[in-house]
Image 1 (cartoon, rainbow, N blue to C red):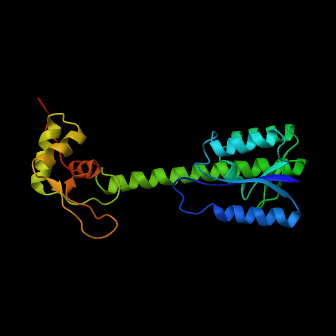
Image 2 (cartoon, rainbow, N blue to C red):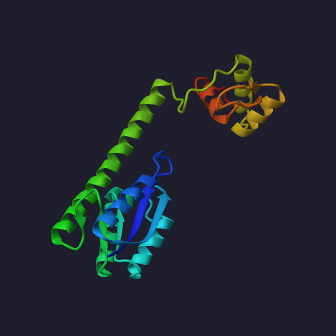
Length: 220
């Protein structure tokens, strides 16, 4: 049979999807399948309109290949509705959907049932992850007194005072950073490490963190 291989990792995932293709190539060779195409995509699985995936799916539906293969169902997507829609389209075209690490074969009743269960589990795991992240962010914001983000540098008191004054007048964060720099209130230069940089305006995130702990006077 002729298969198109699909590997995916999210844009924030540090793993290299190439190892997925290597596994898929080994699977295809072991079963004597022909590889029509092999593509990698870096997009969130929650997006249904991933360009590489959509393009490969269209090729399968045009019968340029007999099926679409990936390592896990979650590589195809995280939405149960979308996964079922893809499965139905492939079934109507007489094509297969294969996940090499899971016994998914959408051409049989048992395979379709397992597909539905695994799709639901993938969506459930994504929802749990999202809830954990939200809970973690809320806890961190509470612990830091309303500020969020990575640890920021400590601003000099004079810089904070000037920033408070500008913000009290309704000045935008971007303009506050520019005005502070014009007055000599800049982020000190760093000579070493990956974050080495010359003296520059304070980042807006750092200013926000510093002023989040300051009660701003109300502009008249």
